[in-house]
Length: 277
Image (cartoon, rainbow, N blue to C red; front, side, top):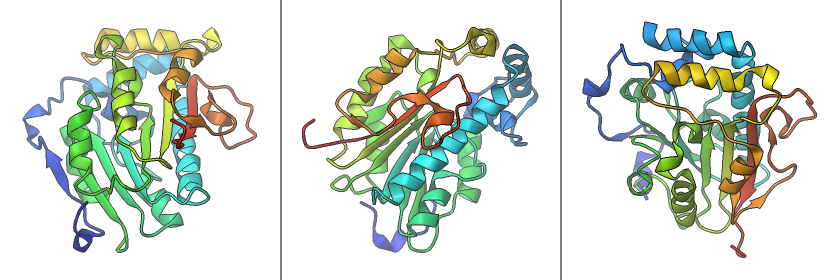
């Protein structure tokens, strides 16, 4: 665990070179930034984003519902569940209500480690993802497909003897089946102690086809090197194997922690790790 003297600081680790940044190659973090109304994106990112929105007009609403789900889940975990550590993989570009902001509003001593593989995210994270004086906020330039490196880097800030909330919010659709996303989640999960939590959301392929999620994914896959894989509720539920799902289970993101019946092409759930695992 990091020295307490580092509390409140933002740190970066891993590959930090801007050489990975190519504005002509769309990246999912910058595409999401565009959907969220941000300005840290390039023409190539906007082209993919617009094509996806043509196929799925509710895309922005879906992305916003995902952000709202994150806010509700972190508020619950930092509050009622009394968790003080968060490992947020697939951070994306800073926006409103980032994980550390939500957690530290509830518990000022919350410690958060962000992980993303886009170099432009690293630049903005250093500038904007600053924690409060009692907590800590760190950033790792890493990839969810290398869970061992993520865990090693996170251990510099987080204490793996105490509960940690693992945040996999709209990231696993970027992991192809051949990269075995279930093994990745299992590796990350195995490193967490009893009392930890898993917060996960994932674009769906088995909701009302008129929403257009499948067509949006197909257009994105035609236009960018990083492919996305939509999954069914059954497939998404498998990520929670070995965990105790909190009510109401795996549901549309709009329906977790709310009474909102609005459908969305995004499955979401929160679970705790018990001694029975």
